[in-house]
Length: 171
Image 1 (tube, rainbow, N blue to C red):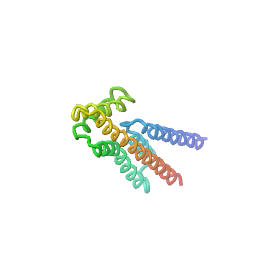
Image 2 (spheres, rainbow, N blue to C red):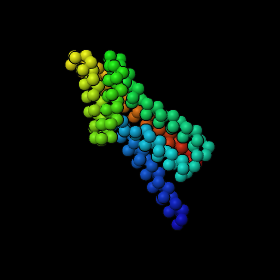
Image 3 (cartoon, rainbow, N blue to C red):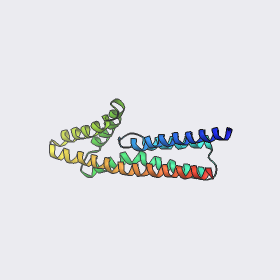
Image 4 (cartoon, one colour):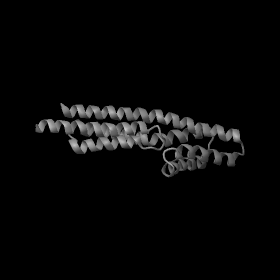
């Protein structure tokens, strides 16, 4: 009887952690949402509950590196794409700040609207050309799309690695 209850609790715990990871993964659709961090936190909880022995430490180290890479992907890819199209550093920084502040103040879509709107506004003021400001803003949005693909792929890899960790611990 005790083994049955323990098995049930283990199963519920693992299912709960997987649900949290999937929320993190699908939350990546919203720019600025720290989905990779959510996945990482769930794997940290798993390590605290079940231990960081053997392969667990190595897998957790890789998960940490993937989380950091995913967190940086957004800003680097968005900024680089806008910069390639001619955006000023001031516009990029203000746009990214508007994205963060917009997400905090008007979640989940404030950042989606704020970053491109501020980038467009700054570039329009700088250049006085609507078409050019739109072209530059399009670069930011394309960078967002590329960053989403990278972050989503990293999130899937993180969940698969966590699954390997669970499987190794079960053996």
